[in-house]
Length: 234
Image 1 (spheres, rainbow, N blue to C red):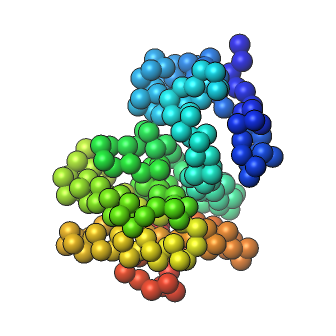
Image 2 (image 1 turned 90 degrees about the horizontal axis):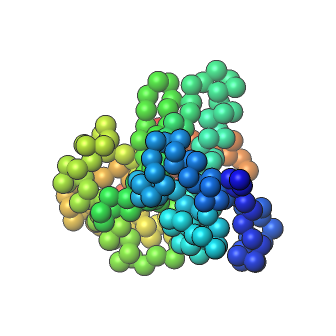
């Protein structure tokens, strides 16, 4: 019984051809679902399990492969937090990423984040949505996206699942894209006349060699803040 397999090189584009990507086989997915006490079909729908290989694709496997740069970018946000939390734990901190849900698992109707997580620091839990943006969405697309968050907030449906409304962390390519998103999101929030917890940063700030604490550093801005007005999100 094979539980994992390497993704075929032929499925990867030129930018990712050198990567060794591993996915669960169908048997691996069945085992993973069973560990959660679920049949595979339910785990695919509820937990967003995906994989199986090109011959027997399960869940959103084909979409994830088709949008591989976006998939890896979104996963990179969570992996970076896990890595930083482990480094901080070595200094006596209680930092930890204690929940990570993929896009399928945290989708709620029109609300379609790229992921949801919960981070612990000093005994406090911080819930957050992730929006990983590659600078390809139109202004109208941003307005629809943040409009769905407004609807989720004003409907009150979030109280069934979250202790307070999670912070929306938007990671984009550069500061030009960041400014475009800030303008679109700010306009949606202003039209709704309410407060929505949105923080933005760019890949360039996140990956700056001088940035020793990555996404936990003071690299985030509010939608109505200037480009140089930055703070931590925790």
